[in-house]
Image 1 (cartoon, rainbow, N blue to C red):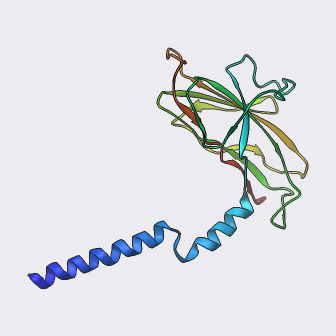
Image 2 (image 1 turned 180 degrees about the horizontal axis):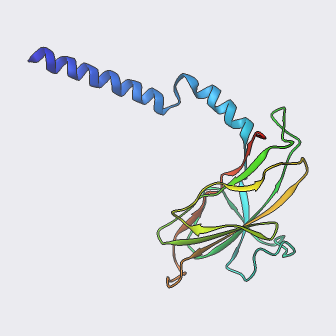
Image 3 (image 1 turned 120 degrees about the horizontal axis):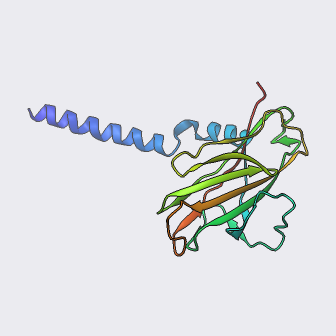
Length: 179
């Protein structure tokens, strides 16, 4: 009985050690980080404004809007966020020509959210905070293409907008090879 308990304890300790190594990335972390650097460009900050009518209008100037950093929280209700995305010629030496490009956004809140996303003035996604997923911007990227990505992050109907806590987690845009 003691041998079984000791063996079980040794197995549990050994598996906990392996699980910790995997959680930190393990032996493949460097390779995975390199692969991610070939497919992801971060959008470190966004311009924001209080809830305004027709935020999708790409002619609307955001030059005087303050900026918010990715993963930065706020407590002032609904927000309109805008980021300008330009397709580079290359990412770490690899061409972007013909790549599929998606925008990955994440918004968190203590309250239910309604998220509407526009690209160059056109509606590309609408949903709530439970249905967030990558949003296709183009299926055939051309270096120099640019996108005005606007996200209207509003509190769902019937909720008090003042004083609600939220945050922006716009990770950036992801490039996938043309297929």
